[in-house]
Amino acid sequence: MYATTGFPTIARDIITVIARIALGAIFIAHGWQKFNEWTVSGTTQSFAQMGVPLPDIAAPFATFVELIGGALLILGALTPIVGVLLAANPIGALVIVHLTPVPFVDQGGWELVAALAAGALLLAAMGPGRFSVDRFLLKGKKGQKQSRSAAATSADSVPAE
Image (cartoon, rainbow, N blue to C red; front, side, top):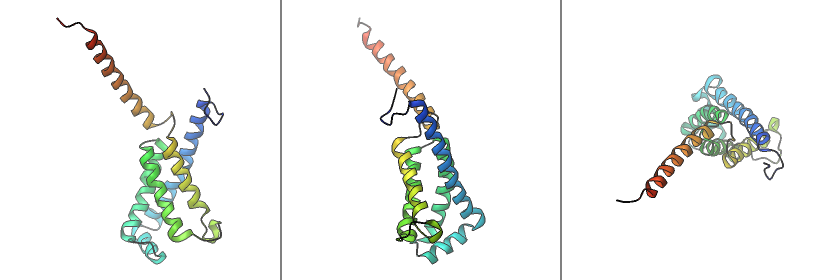
């Protein structure tokens, strides 16, 4: 079976796993940097200097969304929610800090945050693929629904006395 992209479904699922791992690892690295190297209080001070609104809330939010969200993204768990939360983080950075005419990150530009946001939104919209916690959990729920549906159907077919 082929998707509209022309890739076989299995190839699309493998590519999605690779994308989840790469993107999740980048988010974890950035969250770890904020947590371990800069510390949350140092990140809060940095955010305040950059003009980030509510830095006391924004810094811990960014830190833990990147750390926990990155791990969940790798696992393919809660992907639509996690993808949107992960995208919100670099979108905020883009609008507040990196919105410059120069795209290059080494010049304070927007390319990295735009790529991270786009990747997270794409995974939120397209889903985590077959090899994911979401798929495993959804498959179990589908099985339960099918069992209940089959039981209801067979109960309906029993003649009344």
